[in-house]
Amino acid sequence: MHELRPFLRLFRQHWQRLAAGTLLSLLTLLASIGLLSLSGWFIAASAVAGLVISRSADFNYMLPAGGVRGLSMLRTAARWAERVVSHDATFRLLTTLRSWFFRRLGPLSPDTLAGLRDADVLNRMVADVDALDHLYLRLITPVVAGTVAILAVSALMYWVSPALGLLLGAVLLCLLLLLPPLFYFLGRRPGEQLSQQQHQYRLELVSYLDSQTELMIYGAESSHRQRAMATEQRLIQAQRRMASLTGISQGLLVCLNGWLLLLMLALAYQELSVTGPPGPLLALVVFATLASFEALNPVATAFQHLSHTLAAARRLNPILHHTQSLRFGERSVQQEQGRLTLSALQYRYPGALDPAVDQLSLQLSPGEKVALIGKTGCGKSTLLQLICREAQAQQGEILLNGQPIASYQQSALRQQICLVSQRVHIFNDSLANNLRLACPHASEQQLKTVLQQVQLGSLLQGQGLTQWLGEGGRQLSGGERRRIGIARALLHPANLLLLDEPTEGLDDATEQEIIDCLLTHRPERTLLYITHKPAALAQMDRVLTMEQGRLIAD
Image (cartoon, rainbow, N blue to C red):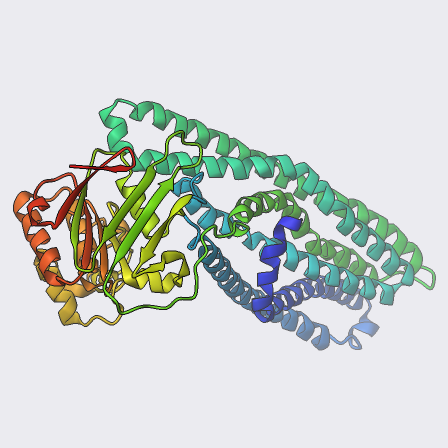
């Protein structure tokens, strides 16, 4: 259970709403038990009163009838309020959990997350966090409400007869203590399998959808689809086992309820027949015993699924407990133009035999435009990651404006360096907000200007800056996504601009216009331009060649 401790601490932020939901759940449970018990007694008492003419006139029909109506209305209102409050609290709690998880995930370097696929991270952030709602809705609330309800119904039976109250309370409390570990033990293996198969199925499905084009080209689409379908069948089998276990738990509770009812009925007849016929109180005992198991019904199911929640917590905790391997300093933003110095840098990926960057030294003066060319895999993109501090070099030093980049605050470093990577991410938001990621205070006129500069004026038609781009910018072509990345770079205030093949996939004419825009927009900017194309090389101050992690002389 120690896996849940980091998440339980966050529950304190919403304790008022969580407590209100639990109290409403208890009120609903008490109203249900009271309604069934009072209704049973009222029907029996009315029948007895009707059999004896002399007593029928003395029997107060109005008070218990009003109690039945009041409890029924209370039960309906409390159940509605409990659903609203508890689900509102749950959604707020999940929002807090997901935001907290994202804040822990965001600062982690690519090296830290190297062993995780994108689908795996997405599954943990969405499905595994969602599984934690089980703690409140299906575990904490039923156990707390059930315990109090058992004590209340036992007190009612104690008022009728101390022996009946003690017997009912003892049996129900014993079941409350014995059933949870029993069904947790029975559901542990199926719950872990269910969690594992859900996780595996999402990974395979996302992988299949993301790489469908490549799979169809190489004729592997059918085999991958069959593998995903086989995982789906294993998931269905795991769900079927959990459903069967749920049926067994409910059947066992019905059976135990029946046996306890017979025991209470026999004891109640003996206790209440001492001074005469037991009368309507016997019906009260019967219906109260029947209703009391409403407090136990959710408990068995809650602990049956607890292993699924624990498995989700175990997958989340490794990321939450990761510490950022990169350390940032306290230096704030400097107004000096981008001067970059690299001294004897060396970086080797974990498990790699050869270094990706090997004893590399380079100096860029303020305003200098340098192109870096080389074959795929020679270490160019890795070099940009080191400059941006997405990774830490094992040897060497990187100076920005004469100061080690490790001495800068993370926010200050991000303001002084702008990277346009090969993969431009478009958020599920408006065009304006996607551009304002680089400059939050940019005016609409500035946004329109940069879109014109990168040849995306067509996007201003129709809804213009307010148009929704969709998840991953699915409404845009690959070239349009790249040009939005370049537009962000034009808006960004950084004096050092790093470009990793920004014009890949563009036609020659558009590429030349984009390059001219990058060079003339802010001439004082320092520029390091990685490319495989010769279009911009003639306009560069220097052209360097990289091979096997080293800069080689021309």
